[in-house]
Length: 115
Length: 116
Image (tube, rainbow over all chains, first blue to last red; front, side):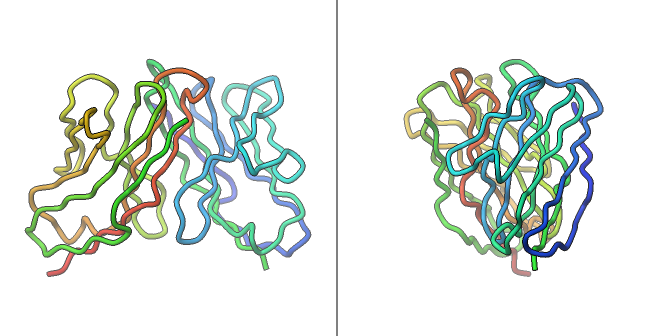
């Protein structure tokens, strides 16, 4: 299994500012992802955080808005840039391990409110 | 490509009644399927998963799901609902291969309400 922690757990930010969310895993993992859960909505994959290379973004998400770092196999950050109220969401880090990456674990999430 | 459809955004049952939450999927490669539960203001908890072994999968808290390839379904059931089962439930799919490795596509979620 994998234990994932995220910082901060929640934050309230002003529009136009940026917030960096940290994700720490208790073991080395290859596959790490960032998801967004907007209020009352399901989870949507933002990007795959690749160690040593640029993140791979899903349709509708761009690096300028959501820059991601992955300096090693246990840590990643997601920055939400130039925030607007529409960015108010829960941001979750996840990892996939095991045979064919069929074990999925999620962090507790970061609840972001943008005023 | 993969997608998930959860039929019914809200399901209401009486305590002790059968719980049935429906999930249909689409996947271009053999799927791995998951059910997660999310309690209010909490993170995601894995209930159970199908990864190409037994088609009837048993999970935590008395839940189980059956993978039916012919129907592209993975419905979640529990014989007797408990008040503590009230939560939001998400079905998710990932592909056992291709570019979708490890990437989860979620359904829209079903909110389960349990009445006394």
